[in-house]
Amino acid sequence: MADEKTEEPSERKIEKAHEDGNFPKSQEFCSALIFAAVLMMLSGGGAMLLDHFRVLIRLGLDFGTNDLSIEEIWVRIGVIYTSALWLIIPVTIVAGVAGIIGMVAQVGFKVSFKPLTPNIENISPVKGIKKIFSIKAVLELLQMMIRAIIIGAVAWQLIRGAITLFAGAGYQTVAVIGTVAWNLVFRLLQFSLLCFLIMSGADYAIQRWQFMKGQRMSKDEVKREYKESEGDPMIKSARMQMARENAQNAPRQSPGVQHAKVILTNPTHYAVAIAYEPGIYDVPVVVARGADEDARVIREQAAALGIPIFSNPPLTRALYRTAVNSPIPKEFYIVVAAVLVWLKRLEKLDGARSALQPDPGSVA
Image 1 (cartoon, rainbow, N blue to C red):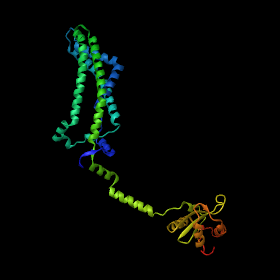
Image 2 (spheres, rainbow, N blue to C red):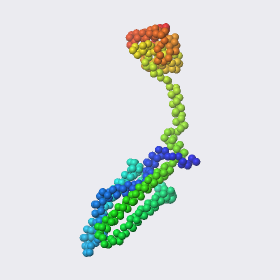
Image 3 (cartoon, rainbow, N blue to C red):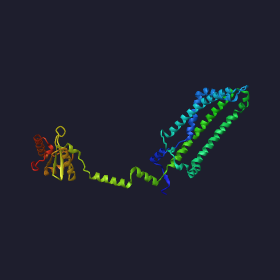
Image 4 (cartoon, helix red, strand yellow):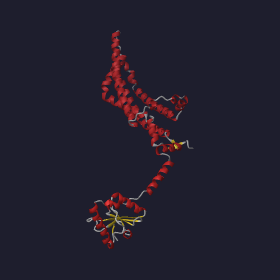
């Protein structure tokens, strides 16, 4: 059927989707990049962050043996908040920058504010239900479940391996407990990064497939887009036909005419262009010739270039049989030379070749 979307999306359709803020992008890839950036930060500045983490553990678990005054409690709360900020702010900044880089790496520097534009269709209950039970939602749910199961299993293995350490936590210093907890968090982040890296490739492939499938076009859409971009095929065909007819009707130019010294005519049926330039042409040469319409074109070119037109039917018909770019036959040397000498004299007298119109019977 014409309404079935079976055609691959055009470049224009994909560009329009990008303008609407619709891109094939993987959140898993961004998450993997965030985990990698945070791990690099913890590896580089881990000592400072570990000190603040130990302060949080110590102040949160160790209240001392004496009762604390109100002033001491507020001081302790201030230190806890300061240490927490020293932990949270760097991680938040690094994670935000990594997330932006991950998004730019997938879609480029393309910004669209159209998704922020209020649209009544976005609050449609029917549309919302369709989104909930769509294939995309099911796939995202499956990915979340797989990710949660894998990370949960890894976390359980790590915690189970550290149960003995936690069991003896009552006999350990707060600093040791903080170090153990820090190492567990660091190892959990490492395994989470590996999980996100593996899933990001599959997720991007799925997102790309869903995007291209959602942008498919029906045959009617393809035709409509073609008309919008290229114009109606019927009108375009008519324009091309007119262009072909104009090209066919356009006069054919003879490039050799511009080198001619004189144009011999019949006067209407034939035209022969003769060139002669000592040092270039040892003898007069036929550089262009034409009959009927071509003869008219040669005459018009000569008139536009100011080349003399000399009417001599017998000589013109005789020279017409000479091939273009070939010397004239020897038997016509004297006659053509007389014509050229006569033209040279007129040039000296008049100084204007374009105004020359000789008597057709002056040269036999």
